[in-house]
Image (tube, rainbow over all chains, first blue to last red; front, side, top):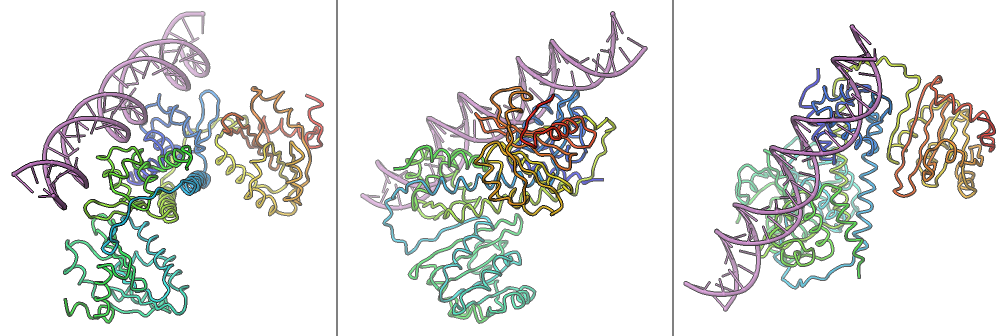
Length: 269
Length: 269
DNA sequence: GCTATGTTTACTCAGTTAATCACAAAAGTG
DNA sequence: CACTTTTGTGATTAACTGAGTAAACATAGC
């Protein structure tokens, strides 16, 4: 007995990976049987029999199914390990070609003389925010202050990166809960850990009540990034700013020097 | 001065990676400038100004673009390294989730009592064929016979795999040209190399003249795979069969024992 | 309040994909 | 062999998605 939800997840994942609905359904169907004919596949997948042929042909061209050209033809899904490897390989190639194509392109200068002092940028998506945080930390020379609001923030690569920071870079890691703090102490021994009342961000600075703080990062007191995570959807959204004189950074420095780091949030406006 | 072709390649790659035309164009445009407004972007990319906003919003949600919520808004592409890392990460996640979803699914038995003796399957796409060849070689215990028709076949992972074969598995590698043979001798010292007149496949067994042999693989004399590469498109297509009694395998064994391996093709039908 | 600019929304048109149907070829049956 | 069923291809329609355009709305500076 297989949950129907699992099917649908597989199908929609395949669609995200570039397959059409019929193609995805056929591949999932074939993955569940040793091999099959158009008729059998159509019954299992509810794809019209006459369209199975097209779908399978495309799947074959993409290297995901094998065809036995007999009468009737037999179809068979490539073993799962090979299929994922094939998909991965195709993707890698595309990303690499994209990278070199974009690198080769000439730059265009944009009339860009505005005051950068108040620039605050926003960025979405946990992956992207993670990468940005990583890039910011990589530039640290003096100090890294990181407040972790959600367990999901503390990924293995991040731990790895923090532990391998230059030894005369201060590392201060705040957490919102005991459980996370224990993890920090265990896995990032070099960090100065502290417990922070993250609620201050909730109640005073953040507009919505229902947004939880994901992470807060301040690097060399000149670059900062704050993210919130929507508890409903799990979407993460961040704002960040750089530059010693940037307004947001100045505020952040004030906050930190006034005690957030010392577990004593916001005694003063 | 940038070649226009490079642009278009970048755009279509991004489309293959799941972006719409406008999104792709906007991202490429932003990648060429430090930052820009909707107006500027529209001019560079030829995307209608009124649609730039939607496109950028989606790009932001995907973690590829940063937005400065001022008036006018400023857009900026995430640095290339971060962007590719984000794309890669998203893809990895999908493939992994797909893998576990497909594994969890229950099997369906198919009425499958046909004689497998004459089964010949076909498979397309260099990636998929490469993976299949790898899987076949991984199962080898006695002997691996590999004929390499095109330089592209001899990839690093393949060389690696061949070199790390169990030492009492025979490895016989044939090539169609001196240059490839030299590579084989240099990079796969453990192989018994030979030069094969691959033309026999062309002229006698293959229907079209314009298909070049890509690779020919025979593992333990019980599994074989032959591929051809369309010189026009570069598409690779393979047929393969398994089982000691399989008709195709029997023919292959005959061919090999009759001298193909000894550089002496087809003296006898 | 007016104009220029920025931003969002609504709508049309074209191309793509899902879904159905009609038909020819092949295979099985009595 | 005549007849039915199965298999495969092609054509057709309906539904949808996305590109392209125009208009409405909002905002800032004058």
